[in-house]
Amino acid sequence: MNDKQTNTEFDLVVHATHEAGLKLGGIGAVLNGLLSAPTYLEKVKRTILVGPMNTNDRTEMERLTAPSNKLEILYSSFHRVDGVDEQLSHAFRHIEEMHKVRLLYGWRAFGAARHEVILVDATAAALDRVNAFKGRLYEVFGIPSDRYESNPEYNIYVSAAESSYQALKAVVEGEVLPQRFIIAHEFMGLPLAFAAMLEDPGLYRTVFYAHEVATVRPLVEKSPGHDTMFYNVLRRAMEAGLYLEDVFGDQSAFFKHALIQTAPRCDGIFAVGDLIVDELHFLGREFAAADVDLVYNGVPSFQIDLADKLASKSKLQQYAQNLLGYWPDYVFTHVTRLIPSKGLWRDIRVLEHLDGELVKRGKTAILFVLSTIIPAGRPAEDIFRMEAEYGWPVVHREGEPDLVSYEIPFYHAIEAFNQQSQACKIVLVNQFGWSRDRCGQRMPKDMEFMDIRKGSDLEFGQSIYEPFGIAQVEPLSFGALCVVSTACGCVGFLNRASAGQPPANVIVGDYIGAAPAGDYRQALAIGQAERDLIEAEEASRVARQIAATLPEDEGAMRKLLQDGYELGQRMSWEVVARDYLLPGLRRAAARRR
Image (cartoon, rainbow, N blue to C red; front, side):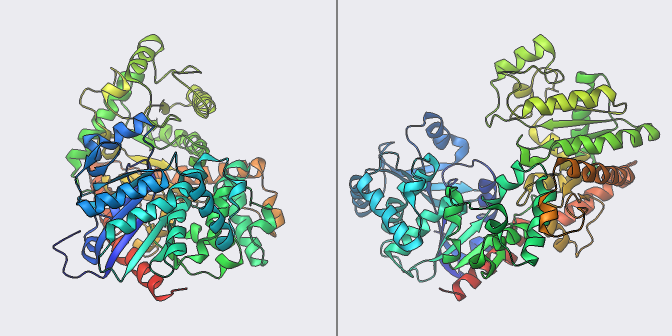
């Protein structure tokens, strides 16, 4: 607890999340930002994070206790640590024996703050108790677990829910906490909220925090029309009084859909972007009638001077020189996961048009795509061997340890572009990390990850499905142009933060609004051919805007730095906590069901 708090408003906020113990992705970034925001720390007396762990996963356990994770373990039967008082120790042991689980309790750093953490390993949970809980889920929430229990991801969260709630009760036993909340981050957090509703109805106010809409993502990704199709269908179908299953059919076989369909039973629903609000309302009549609060993600904002930027940019330029033999005038970047939703081919579509503009101006550029299908990246020894044998990352070969899965067709598209382009080349660095020890001998010795952020002139991020898109706008305060799509949730926040007039730093590709007119059936027929035409036209427009905006002197660079920093400040985690999250909690408290 935070002893210095004198102006608290919320006694206890519990975050139910799969990233309670480890930062794994986007939700971990959200937690680091929100849970260290000054207003959050001032207004929330106590924060506890609850989530799963797997003690059979050696890598997970090593990462959990690594110094960089900043976890202080007070109790863990797996680690043989028992530093809590006798009453709590007895309660933990009783829960472990009764539910056949393992518990961990301690403190973990989130940004500059520390909060309590409860982790539960339910991989060998008592089946009789788990099945009884699943029975209650069906009786009260209509969730047929028998349809999904062959899915290990479903079982992870459902099997841990009841014991997690018991552990939470033990930790707060005897505390006077009249204003209690459970925030369920995505479908993974809902089972804990269910457990609280079933055991102690009305004790906790519950909130579903939608970081995406799991039902929608595969519909967008798997359709050849992608976002161009889906969001036009959504708008036109809702105008006709129709909902998602009316258009796309029954989704009940998808366990994530079954879980999030219960979200209107919570006291509040948060959404990280404007399109996520629309997607939730499209799920059905209960959602259409529900109040959904916008709670955007925050944007990192750091103030650097032009000398700092140019120092980082020179390292990137030197790397280009080492790889390709030229010193580019501009450095473009795209740091992302290599998955279909990121729309990486749109980068190439834009560069096909921008290449000619650069030739006219006598300028050159390089695009570094730092992206891989392998979350932890490749072993350093493989990188050094591939670099020595055939010139990785300029040249790639199919198959491990190099190209796998989506990396293969994307590299072939890069090859085709590089063969015909004159002023700009693309380099795919399919690795996790950005330093010589991770990326090979040709990278400058003093290169570090922040250089690809600070030194970039332009960051691409034209996703087809992007609930928010923190990565797309991370380089904003470093003076980079941020090229995003209208599918990105950050566009709504950018517009609000700039009163509808974003500075030149932000360039938005609209691959949705240019679709042909018609009803939802016409929109549903949009396929790759139609999307390709729209993308080609919009990519040309985006390229012209980029060419007109790229800085040509230090004065222009300084203005981009200043404007980007000021906009980033208006989109900070402190702003999100103060103006979006906490007001959303107040509204959830007021609309008790």
